[in-house]
Length: 407
Image (cartoon, rainbow, N blue to C red; front, side, top):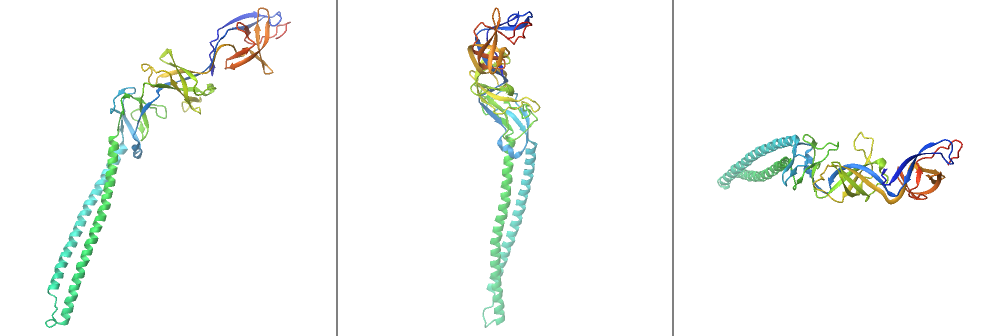
């Protein structure tokens, strides 16, 4: 964390003898203190992004079809219209799946055709047997011997048995016909169910192949996302269902995503004021405030030893002509700010038994003066009591002069 004081001060170098003015001189830096503004700032860097954006994602249905490949992407930051293709995918896996499903569907269709022919033949055979049996039953009934005065008892019994047999045979084939019709319906139903399943799978794959062209949901400017490796998505990279490849940001309201070094993040919290400078427009300052930050510092790269807190900053104003997603920025986060105060460099303070002292120089001597301190940064400390505007303080403790007295 760095402090950047705006305190008007004049540092002069004077040769003087410590205490009562011994025979040996020492060169010491002297600071003449004036009131000013004391600020504790946290430096940060990052880039602009849209506060709101519409994601461009691979259809979630693609999850069941595995990895796909990006074959083409519209240029980043290009303007696109609603319904225009912005990303085109290619999937050899989908095409292979479709080829296999079509082959399986052809096999099922062949099985259905063969089964229908076989069942039709069996059905025809049963009908033929029923027709023959019916004729035989009718003939047996017509020519059956019944008159005992004409035919012998054995003949009458034999014809009665034959007629009963033909009746039984006819009922058997009728039952066989009914069972065959049920079996035909069941077997065809199984095959037709297989066919419907294959047709559904084929349709899903064909729909997915049709969805390989990802279109813009509305007018906007295309921004390409980064892969987990930090590289932006490009043609030839693999992807899968649900993955966010880019976005169409709302450029009317921008925000900054900045990174704060872990060692400089003391005092970082939400609602702190922030000043933002665009790298390509250093003469203009934009303001905002911290609206969110990570709870855990993370490295920006796999091999980086440094860790940063990712912090989100809401901007007070958006200049649509200058501010585009991805524009690099430098930021200063105001942790603490005090106006019209006296502050001295930390090296000017001397501490004894938890009490603070300053070595204040006037025209004739150096005085060791007790002071009270306020806010403190890595470089400066506010003096709340014991120091007046225009006083000159030593930036260090002079060594005692030979033959003189030490402070």
